[in-house]
Amino acid sequence: MAMPISTPHPQTPGSGPADTDLTVTDRLVQANAKYADAFKDPGMDARPVLKVAVVACMDARIDLHAALGLELGDCHTIRNAGGVVTDDIIRSLTISQRALGTRSVVLIHHTGCGLLDLTEDFRHEIEAEVGQRPAWAVEAFKDLDQDVRQSMQRVRTSPFLPHRDDVRGFVFDVTTGLLREIDPRP
Image 1: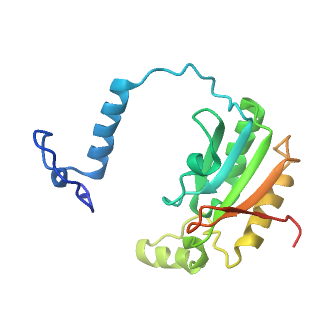
Image 2: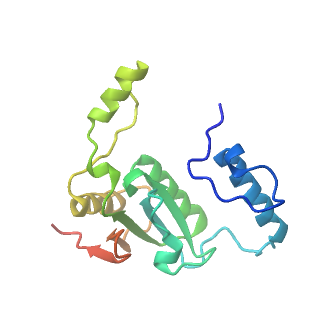
């Protein structure tokens, strides 16, 4: 069943079916068609120009490129719930460094993160609902700064990453747009 759009946009005359008749995915596909009409291959290499990988939360309020002054091709952007360093993040960073030349890692958590309110009970609730416990950990946390430190430590101690010296962690304030750097030492 198609999910309806939660916030319809005003219909412009002659633009086709009412937006409320489209799913979110339909709107994304239409937007892509418009994008592709004007698209010109920038001729870029897959290697990030700035040789940096940014690991951040998937929160929709954070426009990483704008917040960090980045342009297309400058960095690898790796996002997940909480911006925590998991095995899959290490996998992506390993490919980023070993195959695509990145040397620096920037970790970004943020204020008002949904993982601040979750616990591992979330997994148990899912298990009760569907009859199977997820294999993954929630990776919830109560202390933003400490979780950034833990993520920095996970990167700095991974044997798979050849470049572990330039690893810095930050908390992004969703109300001011500012980054606050976290000292790796408690």
